[in-house]
Figure 1 (cartoon, helix red, strand yellow):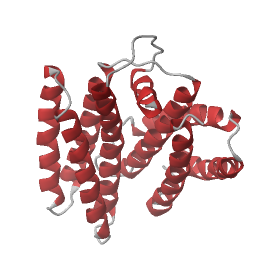
Figure 2 (cartoon, one colour):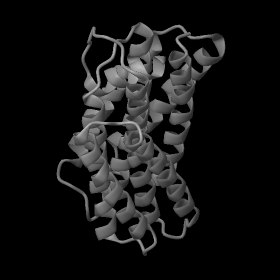
Figure 3 (spheres, helix red, strand yellow):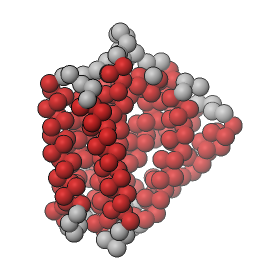
Figure 4 (spheres, rainbow, N blue to C red):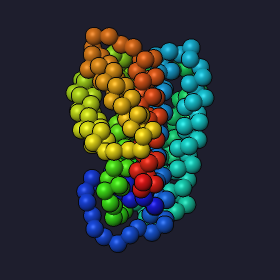
Length: 252
């Protein structure tokens, strides 16, 4: 239940003191949060595949993520009664099938651009679905929000890093990355202030060091490009943040 509270607060960005959500609301919120993360992950990995087409194992990784995406879309579809949400899900289903077709074709610039549009559109849709649901949350819920937001932002940063330097590179990409870096650091500062159990405190130290390295990659993207190292560092960061999110999700 605590995770669900956190999801709402994360997506709405405001503190609300209202009646608790229903079990169905909780399912929708969980699935919406998963959709946001998965669309970033799918696109990031496709852009990596586009850059390194010989890394064929990435196609399997993307296919697995699409299956997870389908499960979360289905969860909302079988739970919601809201007509607006159903309309958004129809769009999700169309876009999901479209990218599955693209994935079976040889990667190119046009397809990479379509994957990028896909991630942005489904993220907005998931935010809209979750934004219609309100929920109470506590301090631990807020900490859970921070950890989930950091996970999402790190995945988005890695996606933008893969975009930079490509022919689909948008004029604002560096500015967008700079804003996300600032947002990550703001939320990481709160994580660093929190006293965790001994094992997680050790992980927290590793998190700080690994983020320092990753931040260097993002802020020097115009000088040197090392996608493999960035993706490896991102995975390490995500692994630590996942443990921290579980801690707060349990309300410990």
